[in-house]
Length: 393
Image 1 (cartoon, rainbow, N blue to C red):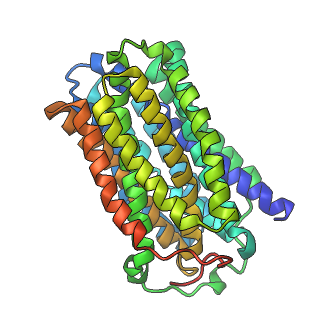
Image 2: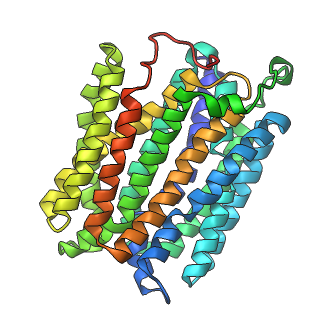
């Protein structure tokens, strides 16, 4: 990659990671904070955590298609500004209704698909997979940092302060976009002939990946609807939750490295990919039986995040290999919509199951759901070694 390509990729990755950091930082603390709000119920708490995913899911495809028509950067500017407004609304709210509306407005800044598409546009074809992997890893890193920073910031500035900080991140993203990210190539539009949008929806390999990212983020969001409460129930004070997350995440990252080597160096990607899904499901089932045990929770979280880290970094790379070159914004929009709709379903279903059944029921449902993903992954085609990204399917 040239210095310009590297600079653009890093800048876009930083925009994406700061935005996701703001969304993720409330995950490990909101369920505890919201218990003291008037009218709070487990269902409403889950809705507040996941509602951003619904508006993101609805608007990712329109934003991606608008970026195909009017250019990527103007759409990203608009999305970051909307995201900042939603963060400010949530920060100023003292009721569940206000926070839910603020989180929904945050989600209206649906720029993930556009950022992915701009990254692909600015990357040479032979380096596009690498650029997508950098974005995927930046999202994973922001998630890890959020789990550490969220509980610490909760002690110092509380949840409203976290929302204010999220607004600052969005405004910083606007500055980075203006100064560090070049425009699309001048001949961009002349190179692209629109293809029927239904071809993106009918691609069965893309469909498998879209369902996979939906399930993954459903599991992640539902986990944090109940995990902070489960940890408190084991007599661990909320101020010390970050220590659990740091230990588990560092160990899971180290454990993930051999699997990446096996997948890439020894060309066993599909086997490792499917194995990570199996590990994900087993960890959820383990949590359903060990939700009252501190040691049990820690062990199962280690397995859970080892699988999540691998899958979260792998899926964008797979999409970059399979997604059609033409109308890439729309194709990335479907992928991103699936991701965020999964987050919405995770919050909604996690809150509903917790309210009507138990914490263990949330984990058991998620463990069972991974069986669907396993079946789809086993039947998918192995990505050809050396396949160029963006080939038409």
